[in-house]
Amino acid sequence: MKYWNPYLETLPREELNKIELSYFRTILSYAKEHSILYQEKLKNIDPDAIRTFADIRKVPLTDKEELRRYQEMDPYPYGGILGGKIEEVTTFRQTSGTTGKPVYVPETYESWQWRIEAWCHILYMAGFRPHHRVFLPFGYNVYVAFWEGHYASEKLGCELVPGGALDTKGRIHKIIETRANAMMNTPTYGLHIAEEAKNMGIDPASFGIERMLCAGEPMPSSTRKRLEELFHCHVFDHIGGTEPCGWAGMCEAKDGMHVIEPFFLVEILDRETLQKEVDEGEMGVAVVTPLGRRSFPLIRFNTKDLVVKGKEICSCGRTSKKIQEVVGRTDDLRKIRGVLFSPKTVEELVREKFPEIVEYEIVVERRGLMDVIMLRAEVETHLPIDSIEQTRVRLQEMLKIKTNLSFHVIIEPPGSLPRYTLKAKRFKDLREGPT
Ligand SMILES: [Zn+2]
Image (cartoon, rainbow, N blue to C red; front, side, top):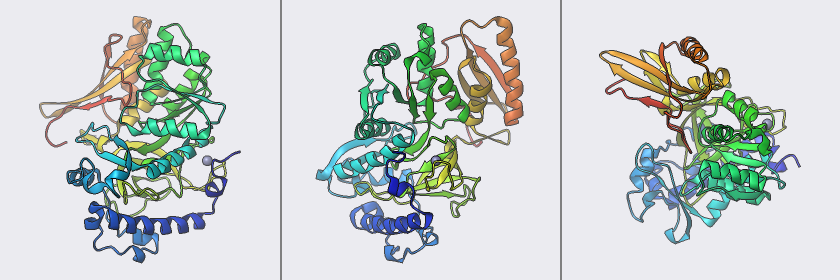
């Protein structure tokens, strides 16, 4: 079968719009009745008056700061973001909290199953099927994405091998031992497994992995292709977050990502005003409303993910809206010497043109009145000195062309840069004061 849900995935646009408007009204009424956050926030909004997509724009956005503020109330630890009774909560998860206090996510059994179903769409689109033995190389702890992947794999009929409590070498041995033929991981960790396997004298292509779904970080297509070459498999991307759930995934066409409709209403709004929807091919901020989840209702959640709006037609036959590309987080965009800079541009270049670079880090500092941008790169162990210097010069030149910024490129000794197991932090802005 081509689709996980043949009916929903091929519904005509007008039908999807009708369903989503109706679901939006329902979740709005529910949130207004059951969550303290939305009782206050929506007091001047009448859900029944929302008849068009233009009406939806009158409903205020929700951001992470509000969630943090409202969860300070009773009942602990969810406070005013809870959309039901605390006794009904069966699953505790939280955001990673790398940029402040974590948001605690309450799920009832019903709402957790809703998340799993949305994830089944993502995995099935990426070609995961019952014959796959899926290796998941993490201890997932309280973080949501891999738990969703875990349960959704099971629901699809795959066989799931949890790879927590092992180091990378141990995981490589486990992949070989179990003959796992599918994986879910962050792009960073996929590259790390490949590097470690090579160090052990094992070609990662020999694992026999057929499908890999990546999560957790924006993945340029050059990184995706590099993973495909290294593992000799098909690599798929998806986008989501702890609060809204995974809301779009890549199909076999590997040309952008499908929004999981009608599970989510996704708006791509103009970055400056957050008012109007951008046109196809333009970049905007993704604003997401999970339409069927009650225990933690979220209305027009500002994900702060910058994405490019895609075409509404795909060779796979699905009729859902598409995201052409994930650019990064609005927080990651910086002004450096007056130039708007996205760290993803550097990753794109490094993964596409410099396979000899195994790890890198971007550091921005202020020296006197000047911003200085450096790229510290680590190359493969056995590279001759001449080639190292060539890499350094070529990288410096190409970075200038790609970003309009003059980088200082420094080649570091093997093993000197940190390796990441979940999300990488390759961008460090050490400037103080306004940028
Ligand atoms: Zn498609």
